[in-house]
Amino acid sequence: MINIGETFLVFNIETLHLSPPRLTVKKFSGSDNGNIKYFICRSFEAAEFVNDYILVGRKKTCDVFIEDFLLSKIQCSIFYDLVSGWTIHDGDFRSQKESMNGTWLYLAEEFEIFNGMVFKYNQTLMQVGNI
Image (cartoon, rainbow, N blue to C red; front, top):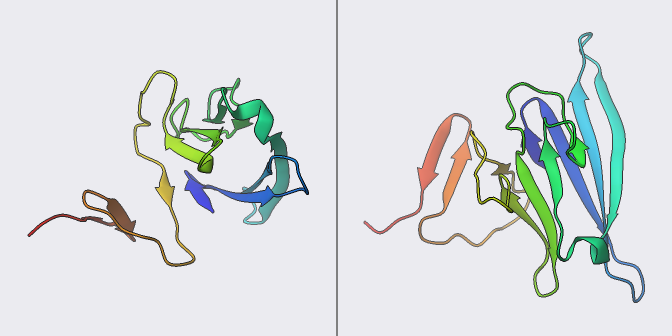
């Protein structure tokens, strides 16, 4: 699950028998009356995104468009790497321009930390480093 502005994106990776895995993106967002809106944005075939990127952001040409003024035009880029699989990168990977507020990962399981890693809980930012 990725939280972008007031929107949550849920990613599902479907592994078919011998085919490269398909990525499906589901979008949840609030509405004016307090109800949650839900719909599937799109499914992406891995073979199409080895040398190309799925763009997520408020720019109308993004593959996953989110109408939210808190977002960057291109909030994050997603691509398929033949070795590591589906990969997410903050900002526009092509131009190496980061988003204005970062793209944060919410963990639902154990995750290996590394030196220099930044993580957030509530309004607190933490960075892993040597003492």
